[in-house]
Structure formats: structure tokens, C-alpha cells
Image 1 (cartoon, helix red, strand yellow):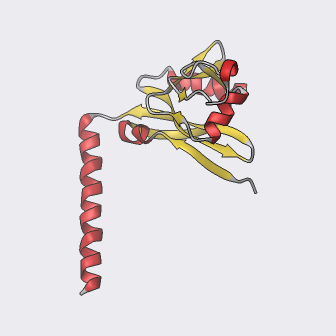
Image 2 (image 1 turned 90 degrees about the vertical axis):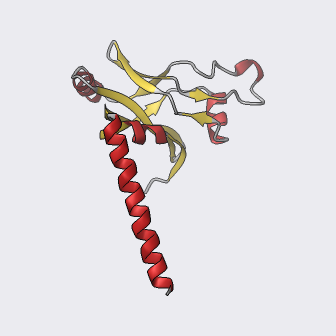
Length: 153
């Protein structure tokens, strides 16, 4: 059994997109980046994935420079290559070419000692979809509150 330790999550992805499928990908990192990730200094908020020449890359992912890294630190916003099987990349490339689909990083985690990125195949939400989700959450919260009050008395 492998141990999973979540490092960062992209909560904005769940708010802005319908996540159709998710895939696990390795990520190509340098040593100081891994040390910075172990300290939890990573942000997935405005990141996205692109497929170029049969390779998949993550753009906009910010990994803060490691404090003790000096000259070995890399650019925090550099484009990083993801490691996936060629067949999976080709399948994703065909799907992303359809209108409205995007590849969005959902979470970053350690699987044993390796850093993995969960990539979601997403379709954008419209404003009314977001309002509907907020209304559902609010109704659920009100119901739970009412049940809690009922159990107290």
C-alpha cells in the first residue's frame, strides 16, 4: 500500500470547472524544488497544462525558491514537464482539441517518495452553474444546522 500525502490543492479548479476525469502524472523537478515542496511552498491557483509536440507541460505553477538553495534555485514560475504514458497524452490531446475542454492541475501530493500531480480534464462552468453550486452548499449547510439544533433540544 502506498502512502499519499497531499501538499497542495487547487480549490479554484473545483469552483471554475466541471472535472470530467482525472489523471496522475509525475513531474520533472530539481532538488531545491523538491525541498521547497516538502516545506509546502507551492501554489497551483492559476496553473494549467498544455500539450506541445507530444509532451505535456504544467504552466503557471509557482514553487517558491528554497531558502538555502543559493545558486541552485530555479525560476519559481518555470514551465515544468509532466511524465505520462504517450498513449495517455495522445488521448488527452484528442480530447482537449474538442471545444471547451482544458487540462487543469487539481492537486500535488507525495506518493511514497515521488511527487505526483493530479491533472483534471475539465469543462468550464458558466456563472449560473457557480450560483447553483453555491445555493446547493448553502441549503446543505442550513439543513445540517437545523438537524444539529433539533438534536440539541
